[in-house]
Every structure is written in structure tokens, then in C-alpha cells.
Length: 475
Ligand SMILES: Cc1cc2nc3c(=O)[nH]c(=O)nc-3n(C[C@H](O)[C@H](O)[C@H](O)COP(=O)(O)OP(=O)(O)OC[C@H]3O[C@@H](n4cnc5c(N)ncnc54)[C@H](O)[C@@H]3O)c2cc1C
Image (cartoon, rainbow, N blue to C red; front, side, top):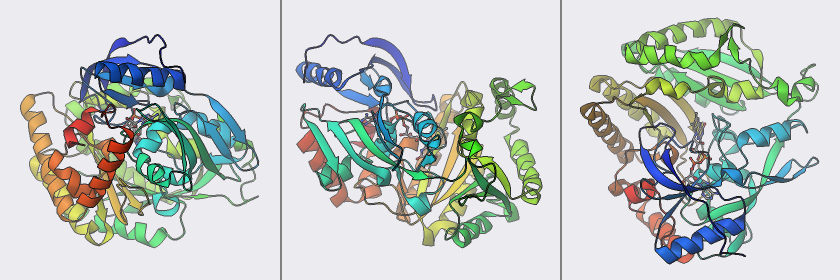
């Protein structure tokens, strides 16, 4: 491996997706494993830490390093092979969920696990072990990784699978970029017989109703996800709209094969055929800043009854999974403060009590999330897993621009975190900006943290790989 290549660093503003954290950093965009190795060698020689970064879709500080150095892997984005018989893709780490589904669907396959945005890279997906709306059924992203190659900070290229270097395999997936840089993946996708899903919208009158639907349907449904109106109070606390989607069986959708055309997966770029969706965020900005989010949520909840009446309906995979991507720059509605997401994972037996308490606390504190998303999960075999046999509630908070507004939101989230930790819950670092170092051992348990630190010592003894997140958590 060549390690003395010239490296073109640039000064940039590197932030989390939520824009609320991050700042200036030196950025390098390698295109080959040799360039990554050269960056590792140079960093070791100068005693500089490096943060690995994919598309920067983590909401908080997982791939930022303020006043530090960042390796952005988005230009290592070649698809190396795709087997149309098995649906196994061999890709570089900068290949995105978008690249993967567009490639797979044309052959009658779809990624087994996708996030709510298709901008995410394979490297970021593996490092955070992302989950989709089918986590309760098919598990996490790591479960569809057959093997990967990782360049360690010591300069070794290690191939890992469930059979080869299994400890590193299970620690690096979900290891938030702390053990080495993924350079290649073999990823399994799943067979689909139609480009469309059968979708139901189901109105849930409160939190318990939402949880009951998840329990009742998780044995049959392929995908389940609930949007929650977190402004609902009293009898309407935790109300929302559940979406269930099922894959089609062979021949069930007469138009199914035609919809395998990637172009038919996208939703129209305009609203009602007229308004470009890129113009929507200023209206949404108005709703946030004129404090009308409660009204918007109430209207959306009321509209759910109409969707339930028209259910089931057929929807493309793309539209079902990535609706947010079709509203460009939607997160700008939270400018100038930006947004943070807080996504606790709570064991099933504690779900109703804990989630109800969290929602009530937000309402009492006057920081009501503008968006709530409830999912059902199952445990996975990875060392630093965030999954539980239970639920997650992703809560999106607009951050107020004032220091006092920001501080009080951080205080609230830490109070919420305490309730979750006491109930045996966990946290997902792709969505975190607030946890304290003292929480790290409580999220995973001290023996697991010790095992992870041992892996870090083995593969990255000079602690070359660091991010703002890892420093905040004292990894
Ligand atoms: C609109 C939106 C919706 C989302 N929906 C979901 C969802 O439904 N489910 C879900 O699980 N997540 C979801 N996410 C979060 C997202 O999936 C994760 O944050 C994911 O890790 C982002 O990948 P990325 O490529 O942007 O990586 P980044 O955010 O840039 O980095 C994430 C982590 O990966 C590490 N990393 C990146 N590349 C490499 C590499 N080559 N080798 C080693 N480590 C690397 C980084 O150091 C960092 O720790 C969503 C995010 C957004 C913005």
C-alpha cells in the first residue's frame, strides 16, 4: 500500500445534519484505500486525530471534529459488482442507499434495510448499524453485511465476516467509526416481485393504541412505522397515524414489474403539479417560528382519517421509504438554531410508561418535538448495539437560537435520558447530541464498554480515530 501520496486538504464548515453542532475542520476526500492509508500515516506522524465521515446524515456530532481533521469517504463510491442471481452487491463505502436501491431494483431486488433518507453511505450505515421500518422483522443493517474490508489506523487491510475476524466484524459494525475505515462491503439485498408496496394508514387514538397496533401486526407486516402528534394531550397523548406496508407476492400486482423501473420510484418534484417542493421549506419555517407546529400536527392527524378510509393503496418503495427526501432542504425550517433528534430505545415492558412520561415532560417543559416517529425493534448481535426488544421514539426538536433556549433543551434531553437509562433503555448515536460521558457505560453495560475499549486498543492504539461524539462520550 502506498502511503506517501500528496493529500489535498480543504478548510470547510463541517456540521451534523441538524446544523446545531459542528464547525470548522480540515477535510480530505480520498478516492482510494491508498489515500486513506497515506492520511493515516501523515496523521500518526503529526499526532493529529482523524474523524471518518460519510454523507454527514447523522443529526449530531458523530462525524464532526471541530477544529480537527475529517476524512470524507463520499468519493469512494464505486459499485464493484452486483450479482443479479443472488442480489449481493460489492461496493465501496461511499456508495449510498440511493445508489444501491437504484441498482438493485432494476434486477428485482431491494436493500433489506434502508434509512428514512437515501443519502446515507454504506460506511455510515454500517458504522451506525442503521435500522429501517422493518427492524422488528429483518433486523439491522449489519445483519445484511456479508463481509467487509477495513483499513485500520495501523495500516492493515483486514477482511471481516462472521467467520473471519468475527470479533472485529461484530465490533466495527455499530462501532461509530472508531476501529478503522471500511473500504469495501459485500451486502445482501432481498428479492421483490413488484416495484410497489401495499400500504395501510391506520389512525391510532393515543400512545397505547399505537403500541398495541405494533404488537398486533408485527407478526404479519413487512414494515410498520407510526407518525406521532406529540402535541396531543390528555386522552390524545401519543396519538398518530400508523403505516403498515407489505411486499407483494409474485403476480399479485399486475403493474408490479413495470414499477421496477427506477424512474417510476421517484415521487413528483412538485406539489399538486405546480409548487416545486424546494419551495416548501420557507412555509415550514414560518410554521416553526410562528409556533404553529401544533396546528400543523393536528391537521395532519385529522387528515389521517381520510388516508385510513382509502387504505390499502399501492405506493412505490421509494415513496414509502424516502418521503422526506422529496422535500428538499426541509431541515432548513429550523434555521438559525437547527435541530437535534433524541431517539431513545426502550424495552417493551417499559414502553408505555416511559414513552408517556417523556412526552409529558416535553410538553411541561415547553419543548414539544415538531415530529415524533415510533418504531418496533428487536435485539441484534453487534457489540455496541442500540437495539432492544422494544420501541424507539425519535423526537425532533427545533433548537432555539438563544443560549438560554438551547441550554434548557439540552437540560430537558438529559433529564429524559436519565428516565430511559433507569428503565434499561439505550441510545442511538446517529441521533444523539446531548448524552454525557457518564452515560456511556450505562447505555451498554461496563463489560461491553471494556470489550469495545480492548478492540480500540488493539486496532487503533494511537487513538487516531476520534470524533466530537467519541470525545464527548469519553470513548
Ligand atoms: C432524514 C434522515 C432520516 C434518517 N432516518 C434513519 C432511519 O430511518 N434509521 C436509521 O437508523 N438512521 C436514520 N438516519 C440516520 C442515518 O442513517 C445515520 O446517521 C447514518 O449513519 C448516516 O450515514 P452517513 O453516510 O451520513 O454517515 P455520517 O453521518 O457521516 O457518519 C456516521 C458514522 O459513520 C462513521 N463512518 C462513516 N464512513 C465510515 C467508513 N467508511 N468507515 C468507518 N466509519 C465510517 C462516522 O465516523 C460516523 O461515526 C436518518 C438521517 C436523516 C438525516
